[in-house]
Length: 184
Length: 184
Image (tube, rainbow over all chains, first blue to last red; front, side):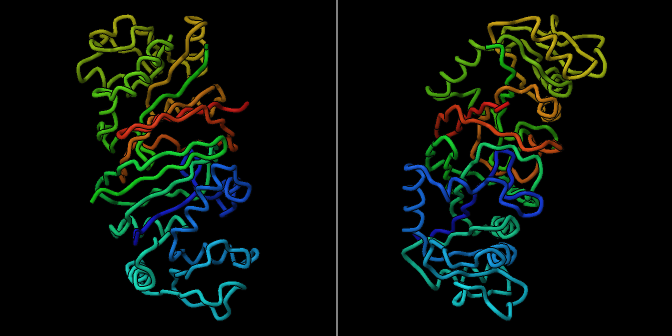
């Protein structure tokens, strides 16, 4: 526990969204889960203590139904350049951190010790986090699609190779859940 | 059988080789296989009827030990702009096709009916093949590494989304074998 986890849906060609941030079918498994996947989601909700997300991911959710139906009833830390004047519905308690990913993670650590800090999006936030060396685990939900275009999770990393340890695979017809630990 | 299969090792961040085509640890699982992986390799060798590869992949192998220890005792079709004057050791019977991927696949189909046509590299050849719509299956051997840089398998695709069907996952500590069928 207390792990920093990147947790995202990704197409087989490595995209977490379409070119205009559209869902592109990458989260169907989450909203209409199979029995096996429902257990994966339940476990994730149970072990998540704080969610970190980038400002663009926040804005996309805010433009839709806000965070009213958010299944993660935990503090949210938003990595942002600025603090919005009015917060989206369901986001009234969200914390905006404007001085970088390290501080966002520090802030998150002060909020929980016995649960995980989960980074749910977007690609830029995940990339900053990987470059910072603060990631403990990567959980990918691999969707059997080649999108051809979109927002790529793993690019602009400019890192030396990072070794991972596979923590297990859970296979379902519509999504393969992959978990890795960063070897430090 | 008679399927056209892209079969490659890939890092979690989507690279099939380092920036200078170096192996980067992506084929260790093949040369020092676990018992489970040995069965995956054995099955692949048994069901492969023809191998297609790009010229650069051929050249890299030729610069090393040639094809003397090639475990695939089947016809090889090399997609190339030109035919080399002298063939590498073990490659004396290789066929060079200079008029595009469609012709390379056609040529391969004339050679086998009851076994598969396997495309083993490189990225450009796989990309041409995906764009041609001729791929039946994608077999990825996912290595738990983030390389940060390298030759990316899935890019420059310029395709409409392609739906895949998961054909199963075989998990081992050092590589996860993923198989998908292209839904046509």
